[in-house]
Length: 271
Image (tube, rainbow, N blue to C red; front, side, top):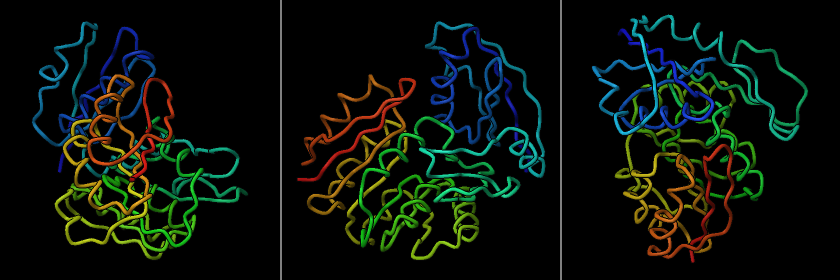
């Protein structure tokens, strides 16, 4: 399998990088690495990025190259650094040395989204730190690397279901669950349709794009226990009114909002 690398250069990367990445993620790009002048996007699909970026009045250029699959991990190894959150959680990869923190996770991302470095994953983790997890049944929807599933498992969740519709992410999750000696986590390949055969949840985590969240909001509400929490991210400040309106229509109330660089996380409660 050969991946294409699109090396983007933006006029104001600190402002527009995340917006471009979000649009290309929706288009089917599978991995992103930030650069000084912009970012590099990876895909195995035949995608013309211009058709997804033509609504932006922002100057950009890009060059393309082919990246053999076996070189992907070396690319990540050069780019990813360990992450420390609140002097409590230390997220590293297999090639980083362990350090003395209360909670240490080993997450090898490969092509999957979610190492904690991106604002949305970081915000989700901040939300997780505020809840109690003992005996909870949890759904991690669009789980990517499985980092949130691993965390809730380590926090004491009774059972965690991690769902992703990407085969590469599914296989990556399985590897990361094994690396962290995670128990009571079930990885599932699929989308919201698989939830029909799963139990109801105390907490649902969904770090996905706005359109998918709106599409599946009713399903999330139906699968959430009374007084359960739905924690969302993967969208911008401008998307909040739409998501809150949909949540309220489905019997959920707003509880907390976190923001980082215009990315948002919402915590909702089922009434």
